[in-house]
Image (cartoon, rainbow, N blue to C red; front, top):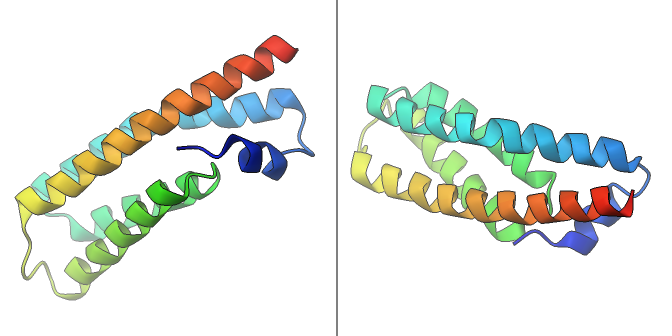
Length: 124
């Protein structure tokens, strides 16, 4: 999922410890962002859903995972439409399924980043 070469090229001016720290921040925070998305759906907090989707889009954009980025962009657009339409047409099950798909991809991305981090640590 993560294009390792593009990711490392993006951060090639950074010290390895900074890259590891960036990865660690993602690994520490992505589960909380997912939980917030699920909670926003249950609360029908469409503004919160849109904000969290936008935030997640920015995070994902940093890690060279184009398919996940596209998925999150589309989700943010859908959340924005819910805000604009005051929730008209809201399909909780459908939205939850999209978040489940994003979650699966985020878990895959976390695995890729964990592997990249291990390689960076090993290189010293």
